[in-house]
Amino acid sequence: MAEDTENQYWYNMRTGAVEKGFQSPSLDRVGPFPTHYEATHALEKLRANSAKWSEDDARDNR
Image (cartoon, rainbow, N blue to C red; front, side):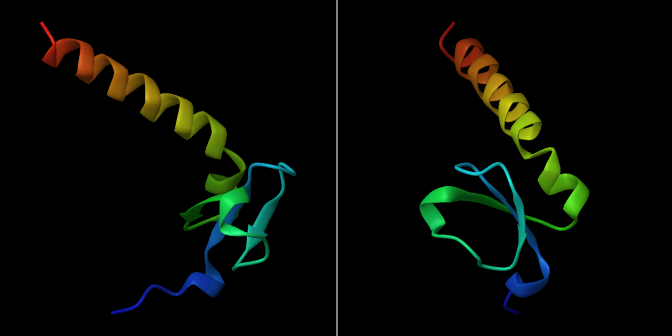
């Protein structure tokens, strides 16, 4: 089943705006997120994921 991208939200890294559907070039946006609220907090989620991956990598390299 294909994702309903027109009803999902994206965070535009260049402008800081939340967009519904494909409104900007893919290089500028991250997502998709199921809700506007989650897209609004995209940077927090990206930072948390990055920190977790760094911790996992450090643990694997011991």
